[in-house]
Image 1 (spheres, helix red, strand yellow):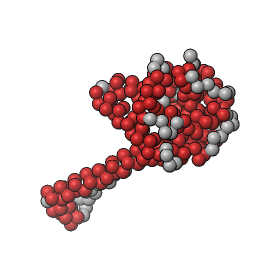
Image 2 (cartoon, rainbow, N blue to C red; image 1 turned 30 degrees about the vertical axis):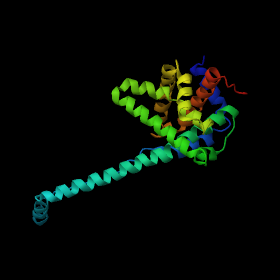
Image 3 (tube, one colour; image 1 turned 30 degrees about the horizontal axis):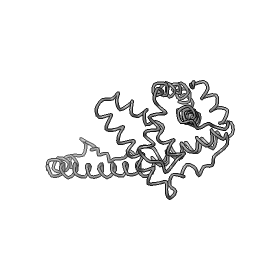
Image 4 (tube, rainbow, N blue to C red; image 1 turned 120 degrees about the horizontal axis):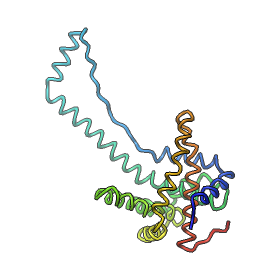
Length: 244
């Protein structure tokens, strides 16, 4: 049985050998996996001192077609941005996330820098489409379960928690097998994993006090700890022992 102290101690020991490389991986992954938020903002300036402009605005805004056209334009742009955001997440961000899991899994296991290129290892031929497909269904299942009630969605999130790490280590694994193994690994560990994640809140809060962005320096520590959790559960539930 694992403990938070055990995982964090091992993570900190390994980070001595690759912290800044891990920081770079987290930073680039954050840029590529961040939510896309964009959209036009319309504002009207009302100036009582310029009567000519006031009358012109009243004439334009008095035409209903203007509002209809403006609404259609806004909806069209919002739809395009949403489609682009979804496609980017499915075909890029999810794959980069698996690459990040792979980097930290190898680095924590071997206590060395696994190489920045591992972040993009999921884009290689023979891996890419299986990772895209499996990660897509993982997100879809979590979303659909979340539509029922909040609690089932959270439970399923932690049930599928290890899917990206399994894909990172076995990129060609069958989708159903990845979900099955993740369920086996997380059985009885969902609540403890949630508490493990909560244990980093203090670190992020402390980092936020440092120029409001110091929390980014905590990311490698958190990722290394979660990778240690994967390696621990892989050993306990799947019988795959680590050499170190």
